[in-house]
Length: 359
Image 1: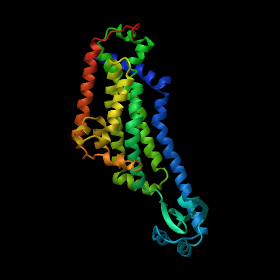
Image 2: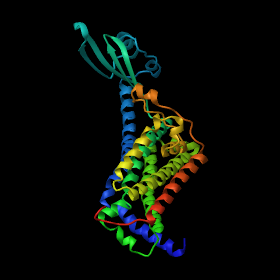
Image 3: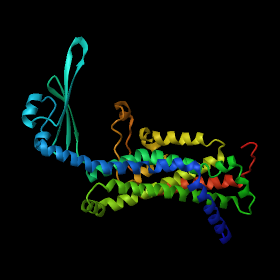
Image 4: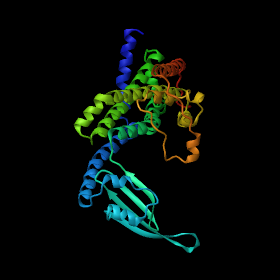
């Protein structure tokens, strides 16, 4: 590649970035990318206020933390009231069951100023106990890992790349503007490289900045000394790993969906097939897991996210866990896949012809 072609690539990137950042077509990409930031901000505002509320309640209705921890299903309502006193909130009701009998139900809530405990009694016997403990940095970082795995990579980054990269060629075909590029004295490979790099820069800036903002919003609720200790111990390494995985996801998915927009008239179909394959990775045998990008992206993530416990038990039985691939191997596989797809796209671009009456 000579200097003239490098100048052409830079010029293409400048033109394409305006479309990728300012086009109305990508507004929904910003919504996907930055929605988690708003959720973390809302949680960082709510959590301290909730702790202050529980502390105020505990000052009026003091309960020992050890007594709360000693509760278990089968305890009687009278014994619990003797031990803990009156709850700070209670509700009662009745429910008719088979045989014409009526169950007396009661819901009580206690707090020690830190944890909020909800108790459900049926006919004066404790049947369900739900405990809401205060958020800690290890807990919130595990939640971050789960959201990053199941929402951010699989949905936000995935569909963001679909929206931006498929339109690099297919969008201009629909707008009947691609021929302006093809009439210029430049190689098709140069055009493809410029468009790919513009899409990578756009998605990288959007999603990497969102990942960083999510991290800041997540830590906002904690005290500065606690945050500093967390960052010094493992926080910075985790943050940079998440940023790197996000950028690699943009590079890998971007190459695939640029090729889809170049080869297929309707790139939605191959995008749907890739989505199904990546989503099914959780249930695939170990050998097949390694044929998807998400497997290698998860291997590079600093925290292994637990499967979603809200899944039906039947689906949980179908989940097959595989040991993460070593970092160098995962990086190599992602690089090879991305390079092969880009090279294939470049070969297809050599014979690219425009017939707007067909496209």
